[in-house]
Structures are given as structure tokens and as C-alpha cells.
Image (cartoon, rainbow, N blue to C red; front, side, top):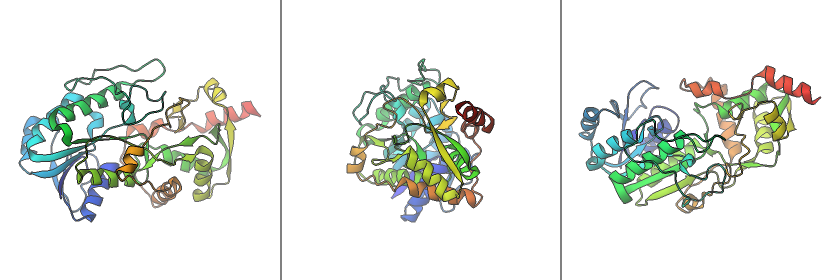
Length: 338
């Protein structure tokens, strides 16, 4: 197999490149050379995916059996369309890393792979879409839906869309799991969102990478929800964070209305917490039938802590600073409940 990874230097893209090399595949990566170093063993090509000349130069390095695009999040649909169009003759198929945010019903409704998508033109610019009053839908969701349409226009039935919800694991740059781990390590009274028995569905970056490469080698098409089919309860999640870090803390479960009253921002100040009914109700059975295998989330937690403890350094990213409640604010909430 010969594949092209658009991105390929950090987190999911890096994991995909490393596993493809471990499979004995030939790997070309394409990125601007600004975020992380190229994986040893790949053929690196540096350039701008929004520049037609750079894309045409890249296409001359082909052909490839598949393109795996891990870097479309920061680009408008028209930029995705440009890349897919310019690379169409150089690749047999396209595996596109998308998101559950493309669904019109997320995060309010239970979702399957056939749920209605947001409507966005393939040639839309970065201004297309809107964010709803309650935070959904989002401009991001519209943009990613337009990116999927752009790839479909270029590759048709040779396109596969992977729609993860939350990806965790070693190398995470967003900071969700690292925040919970460092908070557990600090100990004390840990503010936790009730109910503790609510299940969440984050998936390990290594399992997403494996599934992406399996799809690159297959003849499948269409969309796959890539969420953990079993999940883990929030109580089990925090308990595992305490166990692996050796933290001497205890969670204090607080009702959502109380957290909201104190202005705790869902998804960011309290990572992985969101009250919408469908946020963790995303059916991944089609992906499982196609070969998705997810390791226990406890293993993801253990391995991420091992990475952090070994001085793991994620790529510098502004989203890291968005996550986690400030100690002073947490203490103030605890005091109000005493």
C-alpha cells in the first residue's frame, strides 16, 4: 500500500503515519512543516493545501492507493474541494476524518450513520454556517459537513468519512483527559458532574488510526460514526484517573443545575461534561461491523498518564488553555455547597 497522509506530524495524523509504516506501507505526508516534526520513515512533502501549485507538485509524487486527510478541521469546504480535486487522479480513494458535529441533530438526538447532515455547499468559504443560541449547531459542524460534500464531489463512492466524537490518548493536544489526570493527581475535593453513572463514549486515538488505515485498504464507502461502543461511566472515568495518578482525592457529585448556576462551562471548564441528551448517544454499530475495535477506556487513561509522566509534550495548541475549571472557582463552588 502507498498512502498519502495530509497532516501526519501530531496526534491522530502522527499515529496514522506510524502505524502505516509498521504495516510496511509506503507513506507520504503533506503539511506546512510548522506543527511537529515529520515521522521518521515517511516521505515528507511540505506545502500549503490551499495553494493549487503546491497541490499539483504534491500530485506528482503519486499515485497512492489512498489519501487519509487528518487536517481539514482548520480549512473551509472550498479548500477541501481544491485539494480533493487536484489529487483525484493521483489517488484511488479518500479517507476523511470528519466529526459527529456534521449531524443536524447533534448533540440533542440519538444518532446513527444515516442521520441527517447539516447542509453546506462544497465550495463554501469559512464564513458559512451559524452557531445556535444553545451552542448547536455550530459553524464548525457546517464547515465539516461542507468538507464531506466536497470530497464526495471529487471521489464519489471512493470516499469514506470517519465521524468521531471525542478522541483521547497519548499525544492529545486538546487537553481534556490530561486536565482530568492532573486534577486527580492534585487530590482533594474534586468537582464532578452528576449523575456519575452517565456513560461517555470517547475513543482512543490509536483505535481511530487503525480503523482509518483499515478503511484505506478496503473498498467501503460512506460514513462511519467512530465512538466507543461500550463507553465508561463518568464515575468509573474519574476513579480510574485517581487510581493511575495515585491521587488522594474524592469526587463530589454536583447536579447540572448547580454547575450551571455557578457558570461552569460545559465541555470546556468541565471537560467531557455536556447535558444534551444525544451527546453521548452516537451509534457506532456500522463501524464495529466494519472492523472498529476499541480498547477499554481505562487503558487509554493509563497510557495517557504514562505519556504525561514521561514528560509528554503535546503540540502547542490554543484549545489546551480552554479546558479545566480554575482551582479558585472550583473551591468557591465547594464552599457554597458546604
